[in-house]
Amino acid sequence: MMNGPPDGALLDRARGCAVGAAAGDALGMPLEFKPLRPLHALVRDMLPGRISAGSFTDDTEMALALAESLLAHRPLDPDDLARRFAAWAETDPPDIGVHTRRVLSQVARGVPWREAASAVQAAHPNSAGNGSLMRCWPVALVYWRRPDALRAASILQSDVTHPHPDCAAACVFANTMIADLLCGAAPQVAFERALASAGLASDFRAMIEAAPGRRREELANSGWVRHTLESAVWGLLTTSSFEEAVVQVANLGDDADTAASVTGALAGAAYGLDAIPARWRAALRGAWPVGSDTICPPRILPGWRIAW
Image 1 (cartoon, rainbow, N blue to C red):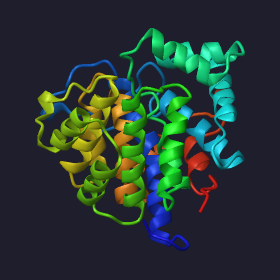
Image 2 (cartoon, rainbow, N blue to C red):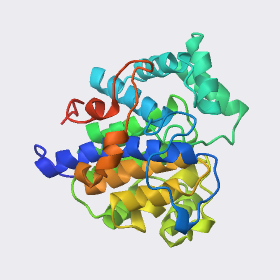
Image 3 (tube, rainbow, N blue to C red):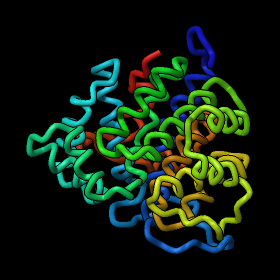
Image 4 (tube, rainbow, N blue to C red):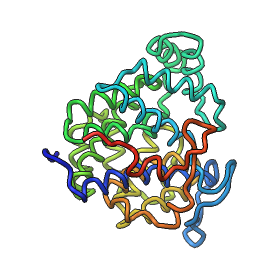
């Protein structure tokens, strides 16, 4: 990873990562829980779904809560992060994951986050959803040149709700890729470095290593963290533009918004802000805190104080 102050290209890629994650989220939103779309009928524009066209969902809302926590506290303070997540969940967002809701409902009642997350995980030991992977990208924007801190914060932010080892390792993998992409590494190079260093379980690693060779019909794209990372890697490494990577993954259906959001973070870091279609940026909107009148692009473009 590069040392020294950021140059203009690096800053453009950092902004691309943030806006790209929100754009993928919004593009995939109306395709969530839908079947795989045929290649001749791919959705390429933001459409309305359970919320209005261009709106981002819990994926981006939780990422922004993580970003706010990192702006207020470095190193990452998990108690502060858990409070922010619980306050967000109390607003009754329309699309919060079952596992996440179980943990945060206990936190809202005063249960310490580690106790709450451990109890939910123990009750559902096979639960390894994508709820911490979808939100993890702000860690890479803060710790892009500090790999040890990046790893620690990636795991810690996952543990607040998703302590399963696969969830933590997936966050380390994605953020390791993003950090290298921010510094100008080619997607394949960033992928290989993450494979070597993220600490994925052997069968998980084999699955991700094989992802670029999958046919789109073979990708389940479910809410399982392994499926989400598989789809995102497939999307980034089998296409050559931001738009095509996100379009291909969003149109896999099922957990389309989350997989496309993770893809958007990776592809935005690879291609930069200017590579995100202008029509998507114009349509993109959302609020944080929920219910405010904040519109997404000013929120996570230059006004968001990325820590260098």
